[in-house]
Image (cartoon, rainbow, N blue to C red; front, side, top):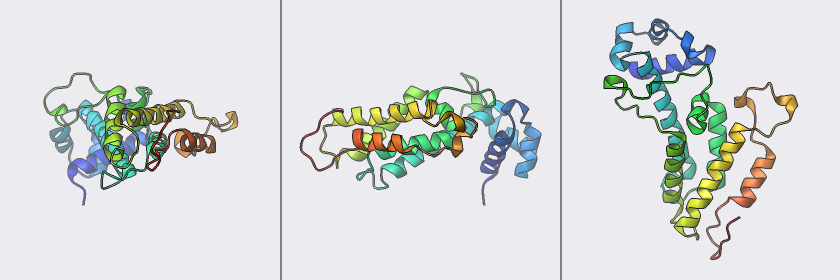
Length: 213
């Protein structure tokens, strides 16, 4: 059974999927979660505190997916290409993840205060896109370096290239104009992207010689 905090975050995320954050009311979030409004304020302090916690959870869920993609034992990763595909899928499925990765916050999304304090700041530090990219790259290198024939510097470069390519596809999807009205979350990762990643960004763990694409 979810805690009151998780129930409130679920309720806030559900509300955000239906309406802009500016229209989301705290009283409605509390009612949907089945708790009092005072409980909501006790947990998050304010609507901005709720927004920060919601975005922080999106970041944590994305990072958990990164770890799963790279391999549960942290030694046998799936490679930069798999990481890039996961990143595109996660960004298209969750507008908050996309905003965290790209720094592009639409009018429908919450934009929390830059310098929160007190309860609103507790445990909800939000990374910039650059900080998040670096964090994911470093996790990928840590997971892959034991099985990769590449040196650490080259592996870092490959992982960062994969992530930057993923972000480019997130910002500018490669679908025909006829699909422009489809929600991002419904668009599949294109065969062109898959082919490009497989040929240019995959990590060879057996070959003693590597070249940078």
